[in-house]
Length: 241
Image (tube, rainbow, N blue to C red):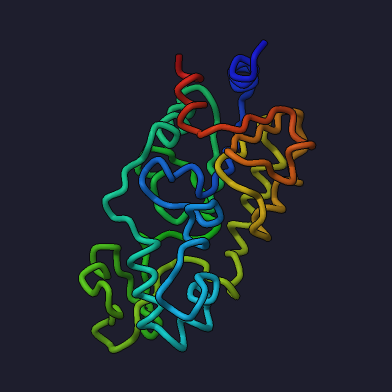
């Protein structure tokens, strides 16, 4: 049995599936990842600051203008659409109980139709005034691009994304750990599993169907029951044949 057939068999024999997704899942939608050779962290910036510094809580407070110049140009892709992988994982809901636990902030899982999505790092579609907490959608703040979006009250609007130096939402942590611990099958896709605490959630899986789908190796490869190193688009196309 080849790896694709083995993956099909695992999926067919599972009732509760958790898909743990990272930036590599959205690269085929035109959104760059962070750590690959062509990723955001390896781009040469005009700024004297590194991307990690720019997308931190303290930098947002001290340098909102530079933060938003980077944010609008590197992290917000309003024209991006779900790709074949987002659509495939959404389609699994027809015959399985599926939970998406994602590190992505692009909302593409929801756009593809996934209903149960835990966004560990928040989402670009939600934005709040830091002063009065008024809600703004993505279209509201794109009008200010590449400048600083301001609320009518004078407060700066902040995207509902988890920046460096900020904590994950406690309810999302509890829910993600519970779903991973209770599922039959855990499919980890498009993530290098180096960003903590999210990457550590994989260790809460108790079953025998841990699948890693990623272009490069991860620290969990030796612990997985099935590993496929390839572009997720190729894997899904083979799965759907």
